[in-house]
Length: 221
Ligand code: AMP
Image (cartoon, rainbow, N blue to C red; front, side, top):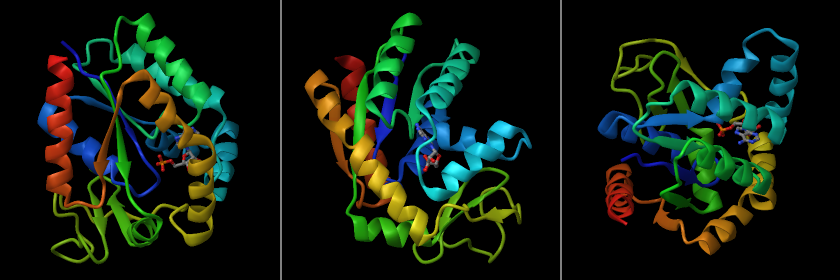
């Protein structure tokens, strides 16, 4: 029995944080197209350079590129106990492609979890966030600082990074892209009967509990 879910929500809704919990607690595989693209941009290739420009503007990378990345990952994790799609799909074309890719490997989508957060909170969350370059732990200047300044609590690394696109201009554009191209997926998955909504402004543990409840319910459906 495998469980495959999508975490859907604007930038800063907490998708990455919750995905990491599910990886630790349930051994699911997190497929974050944002992380894959950030790896591609440091690869020094022509494709990486183009992707970096698009990401820094806050625009979406082409469907073809991200669908290709997801296809590769599904191929290389054939035995996974379940996938968390984090930041994918972001367009209706990507949603259709995901349905086909999952169907082709005998998997199904169990739940689409919309993480709802208002825009003011997103700006606060995004402009203060930083992550550990070594283990991926997510922090925030005000709400979740490291215990020792400059050192990751989880792994001790001092490689703490801020994303190039976590500034106000890119964020405005990323939000616009979200409302124009990604938010229509909420209606699409609602119509398919797969949609669940959680309050992304609740405490991290509370959001995790609600997501766990949805997963347990989906597993028995
Ligand atoms: P994220 O880490 O999910 O916030 O993604 C960071 C950036 O990567 C986005 O602003 C887009 O430029 C790009 N990106 C990530 N996932 C996708 C996707 N599914 N489709 C198109 N662009 C994406």
